[in-house]
Length: 358
Image (cartoon, rainbow, N blue to C red):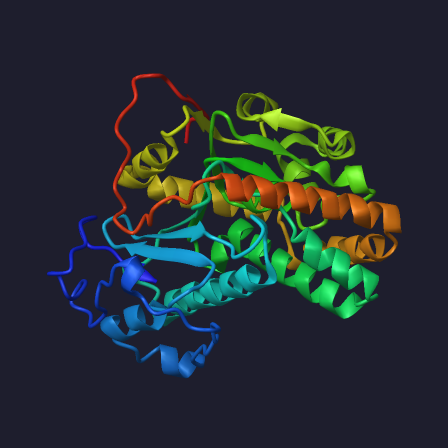
């Protein structure tokens, strides 16, 4: 994780907020082979100093870029999967570790302390792509080997991540999805699990799993039915249709649509409105209380999905492989964005955005 101070990190600024964490540019960080979730016990966490708490969050990720901005008290999490532009098993592991660390940091604070983290933003570093969903090559391979446990492990860790987003990490942190490119299948599920969803025009959104005799099993039904009702949720899932950002806004699926290239600016504007933070937190807690998304529900549905996945035919698996190949070809055509570690805001644009008043 990179910590950013005043949104202008430089090599001449060796520490952040009085901590001992060096602000190292992304290109200079040394990657490790694995991320180890060595989470301290609660008794240990409670005695950590501020600098130790910050250091506890400091970690090198291979498939995520994570930044903590103390100005807005926001964790920015950019997806950068190695391989297909999907939820690879490696990226799911890293998201699980990151979520545990955020929860541990929140637990370390006293009930009357000012929180170190107020917001969590999920975004992507892949040009034109937020996330294309499940890792189809991994899933097809595990189906051919009849490896139920590996498929279930993958599905359970996916819905654990979805649950944390939906439940505000069980500690009042507001989750925001910044969708600057296509969000399909599991990519849409992860976005909709967040409390507030911002989408740039030009993004394609949908659940194409019906094309290979499957359904989106990591939260789509739960999230869509709560936002737009079960009948419309099923219509979207069964159609396999790809929707535009404006169509999804008109249906009530997403909260804010902005022009292409203005998504990050819109999120920064949302984060900087400090007066509304308490009201937002209260509304999202009320949402979870009135119509709760539970981990038990998500896992029960994903158990149905695991059974359905293991029943896929060879023809269905070939369709999955073809789709995965098409995604990989598209990824190779796209140029890689530079590191976002500078957290530079986008330039203003005079065109209006479509938004839900929050």
